[in-house]
Image 1 (cartoon, rainbow over the protein chains, first blue to last red):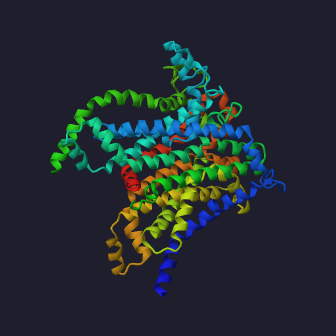
Image 2: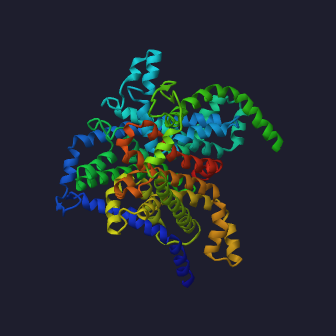
Image 3: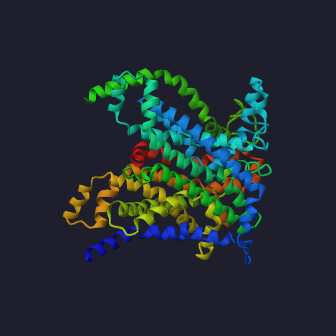
Length: 296
Length: 282
């Protein structure tokens, strides 16, 4: 009994610093948000309690609906191309090709750049006056390339998504390279002996064996999409006229530009609920093994 | 055995040579924005002419770096970035692997609750808690202080670190732990001398991830720092937006300066990354 207690204390001591940091910067903010979401509050003066009014208002807010629709575009339109291109790159670079480390670095570098850097350079690339797209459009006769994609409400969100794909494809590639390393080569040789062609091996054996990689990327992709703030903020600030608004940028605007901290907290609570619900349901459906590393 | 494997591998590589025909153009295309950042940083404000579809300056010069150096206290901003990133990486590595060790090898009460909170924290959007973080830092007297940022980034980086490091600890045979216990080592010694050094590939992943978060982010500094002399590099393009309008070349020079350290860290840990991730997603 005594030793058990002592072991428990040792374990807790190892966990203590992490638990304290968590409590202050993760758990408390969530509680705080929930509380603030029931207030009509400018963040400075005392707030008035309004119950669920903010939530009622939010679900009738057209900008909130635009942000939800944009997330609905964002999730599949980033995850699928990133995974597809990343998978193909990983397949190509997993076979000890000459200079494959250089290729890996080239495709991964966009992911490690600051969104400030990425945002500003892509603004310039898509600039309708001296941008790269315009120049290429002029040279090739493809005039539509000269469009002001970021300022056009019809295209703004897709332009941001496009940049996001460029930025994060290398990340998917790295995940697939890691996943490919774990595949037992004897399985592939057996398939070869059985007369499977390379295409068949890829589609029928390699692709299914990478299940936990697909799932990790799917989960990280959904979370990442919901979290997206920086890139949108630098590229469009959620504009024009909220056309490329995402939940985080809208919350930010409400809190720090319009001083409606109560309403911003409501948006944040909804965001957290969506993020947690979607990840929990994924963990439930597919098993938690791919996160915790436990045996499935 | 090894010789045949190597021969097989090189044969495979030779057969894949046609891939270069696809990969080279794709890689060049992929690098266009990066080349452009470097290219435009060499574009003098006296001659904003460009060539090659606007990617490179017509008359490159290093004048922008001189301008940036003279115009802003750029070293101060770089020092701020370092003072945010380095301590937060250190905290996440040490605190994260301690927690990971406890969860992998020690007896811990409420394990399920702790894991639940971990996953919650992993999915928590930084922008969702930024208002609350801002208020908490104010209450702790850490508003407008770099320490507040360090602690916030450490907390947000921990879940990913703990999950990845714990997986790599679990991969170390349990017998190692038992043998060390029999030899009379205490928990801390086993952790620090045996487990921690063995987790190097996983730690590489954590380092790059944490550097990406703490060095690249501008949201938290934007709302929690009010003094200009505390701002990290990432805020320079936003804080001096007006000035840079007439000096796009200088703006891109700042972008190059922001990017060099992260790219350097990436190149240093690159060879561990794939293995570290492979351990983590097994």
